[in-house]
Image (cartoon, rainbow, N blue to C red; front, side, top):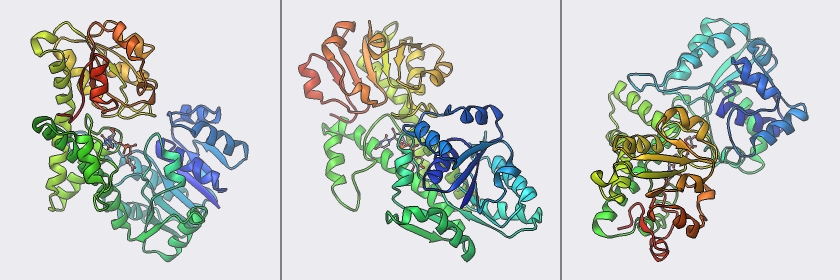
Amino acid sequence: MKIAMVGSGYVGLVSGACFADFGHEVVCIDKDPSKIERLNAGVMPIYEPGLAELVAGNVKAGRLSFTTDLAEGIAGASAIFIAVGTPSRRGDGHADLSFVYAVAEEVGASLSNDAVIVTKSTVPVGTGDEVERILTAAAPKHRFAVASNPEFLREGAAISDFKRPDRIVIGTDDEWARGVMNEVYRPLFLNKAPILMTSRRSSELIKYAANAFLAVKITFINEMADLCEKVGADVQDVSRGIGMDGRIGSKFLHAGPGYGGSCFPKDTLALLKTAEDYEAPTRIVEAVVKVNEARKRAMGRKVIDALGGMEAARGKKVALLGLTFKPNTDDMRDSPSIAIAMALADAGVQVSAYDPEGMELAAPMMPDVTMCNSAYAAIEGADATVIVTEWDAFRALDFERVKALMNAPVLVDLRNVYEPAEMRAKGFAYTGVGRG
Ligand code: UDX
């Protein structure tokens, strides 16, 4: 089967490479000629473990190719995926659908065979209806249907998430389109991946509801962490204790500096917008958005407290370990490190930092921060070291060396990587999250 993937960003590229790996013939299309040029030369536009190898292998096998020419790319494809960005619209947080609609126009104008048009981009409820309207208005001479097929890929684990999904959601009432989508995902059925066939609107909402629910879960445990600090409890144990209840589940209950990334912040805002438009307010999600935003900057205050308060902090030096919103990505979007670095700079603290993959993108976002070429270089002369992102490289630091390099042995562990008692035994003033 031939599949076209319009948009070769994170989702399009990972999905396209994985579909090719299933044995389909895949063409990834993108408007950006430099991106396509680089992809043709084997250079990945993003950092994702295993992606470069997967792309190279499938290009070599002749199943995966890249083009800027949409009409040529979609010719002969039975499924045409729209996987372009839906960033937050400036001003109101609504998802900006202009890229999705532009693709729909172009596909409508160049459709040269029967095809199912599938929105993989995260799009608000009703977008599929609009895509269908645009396609109908273009009056293509061929049969088409519009389906929704949201992605649930986590950055850093996207390939395994694609190949071993918890579920595949397909939204369309059209029997023919369901058949085509079954073909697209057939290789996964062999692994017994659960597939949920539903209406297009339900499918669109499932994506937002899933991300919002996960954001709620994280924010819930973050607030419990604050309470733990006040009452003298340990959030790690509270998390374990509630997570063992099968109804709650243990995942996404790790307290930290607040969620960031390309999805949760933008998707929660877009869900609020939809809820407002349809006059069905989602107050829980409203609270989550506010609490998470405030939390990021509050983490800066936590560091300042560890330095002895505002007065004492001025002129001191802090090392940030990890800048990306989570490990195994170079993505800096809405990373808590940005608000933390800003809060520290505002308090007159000098900040140095190290991140294994994120510094190139981080540097222009935090001009006052000195980027260093190793964790130990960042730590040198610091009055406090802060673990912001739990990269594996920070899980086994040589604390004798760290102590010798630092001006004062103060460790703020925003990901609870280390055991408080052990760190205190090593001579560190240790602050975690929710470890009262
Ligand atoms: C998320 C969803 O998991 C994925 O299904 C969706 O398609 C896209 O959005 P991603 O943004 O890659 O994926 O990251 P994820 O691993 O979900 O983490 C999001 C944020 O939550 C990170 O900032 C992470 O540090 C934070 N987080 C996650 C916590 O603070 N605690 C947790 O227990 C889990």
